[in-house]
Image (cartoon, rainbow, N blue to C red; front, side, top):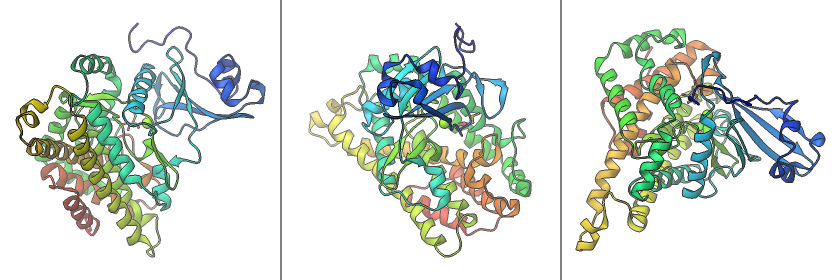
Length: 421
Ligand code: SR1
Ligand code: MG
């Protein structure tokens, strides 16, 4: 069966049909209650692709996520394989092993129905919404920095058995259509007048400047080549603040359906980019009183995420480096330090992360899938002014990588003070 064919028997769930359709699943009954008639079901999917149901019964709650055979944001004119649920399921199992407790527990997977039954995270809410509301999350940076380091390190040739890594690379190589979305939307569409693009009208002068710069386009395409060809580790593939759920002190990562073997720095760069867009959008969401303090907190999260990534990566390097690349036989076993090699690799990862951060700062403003940080700003002139800062920082990052997170934060502060329109 081709990836684009709908498997025989697949049927999208509805709030009405879900109880009958899932009534035979022992795992579901055990967690929600034995009588499906006592379940209540809400559809809460607010992402771009899937159906998401919360099922509540006398015994508890769970989430049912089901892929649709098309892009929900666009409609059935853009078909999308159901197989993405298979990749999400396999990515979740690997992430659960590589950073235990950081992703929802899976209760059931049905490949034909493209559905995953999983833990209901409560009282967690989507991080993007929390940041728009000006809420803080204790331990956010360390949790996500460690998550990026653990999944990057443990999903790579630094740690995995070589045969397993190759088999896994082949498995996830099938995630073609989801990669295609990223390849078009994240790396390419921003830099020309692509059909599905839209942007804030008042931003036009800044858009024209960006698209007139051949060096920016070359740098973005270099990052695309890194994405398509740099199969270093199993990436989450879509780690933005809408793929993170938090309470005030707990953080979880969801939605790895874009998982694919790519560069070590991709997830870190995308995440930092989304923190930065939260930062730039704040003047429209906060009264002046408290704005500086909240923006400072967001920048501190960037530094903590980067710091935790580096610290954890170094720890894993020292204690769990057992794969085929950078073997201990070349350094430690000869009584030498591998710190220089490690730091060189970390510089490579950081430089990539900053390039990915740059393209993401552009695409959420210029291509199809915008983010609520900017999109909920109703005054379009005010929105454009803030978006222009994001475009400007994205351009700077593509052309000149900051050496570390302190330098990145200094660049963000400088861009935040600019009037670019
Ligand atoms: C057509 S899908 C658009 C975006 O939504 C997902 O969350 C990914 O970020 C993708 O690029
Ligand atoms: Mg998603």
